[in-house]
Length: 298
Image (cartoon, helix red, strand yellow):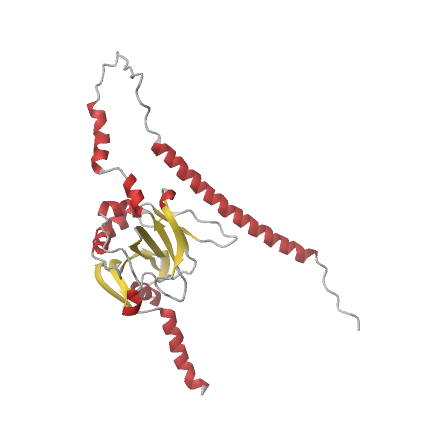
């Protein structure tokens, strides 16, 4: 009886691990990359999604945001923490951004945009995958895999292509954004509903960030302003007005604040590692100092 039930139980377990079926549309890309819209094939599961789509982000706005997202892989207790790396290289942004922006503009409230990029790496491919959606006037950036080395021909490649929010490595990653003051939060997300591991999610107050960005007209005026200044002969020193306003320090102060915040986070991480190491050393010291138990004489 047990032998007859075992195959059916295994099928049910595997079905639970794979997560719900995904329905895709509007796919654009090539063999090594693509962008598309995903949702749950089950209409009841899809009805629970309420995203603020379609998105009105322009291509330049989306490029300014994604170029500032950084990924830091999680490390073990005794492993050295790697430095944060950009989510996308400039080449990946140029390649995928136009399609990603158009995809978000055609998304429905029950759909999220996904991306997949595979670069050659040794005996396999380095896969980066994740997704984007807008909810509550905030942009959510989901990263499931970042430069994950996967052997060529592996079933895992097909699984990630089928659902780019499905993480493969299992370690997870820490996501950050510069300037850090526009980060509304970071969290683990089970949007893919995979039983293996959650993906990493970064929530951004992108509207506030874009509001502080200089417009193209303002940037052009800033560049053209020095050309209209009067250039005096070298023998005549240029006198500055007494009441001239000093140059704005906003950018310098913002850069210093971001650097201080980044250093503060690094110190907090190091304090946690040191505390864990002290605990381990105390446990080892206790084991060394405790005398071995003697067997009672018979």
